[in-house]
Length: 115
Image: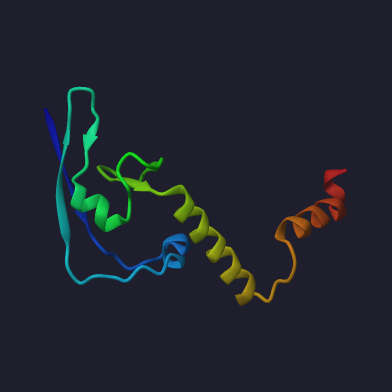
């Protein structure tokens, strides 16, 4: 049986999606042992799931690679909400009103190089 260690570090947030989630930062590191079975399926400790607010077996997660040796599991609903908050904050910062999709379509209609 393979074994992996999950190490949770809190680096400065530069990713606008993560920053939009407004999670309180910690000044300490939490590490949970994760074991992979013969079919490469991880067993995630209940304390890890509880801390992340994930109900075991009740929801689908999105997995992505975040650098060598680093896999991130995320709740797609929380990820979408964070992205929406990030876009809304960007629109407020730049004083953009209305739909960005409508603005993009209007720009495309006006772009003569696309005709």
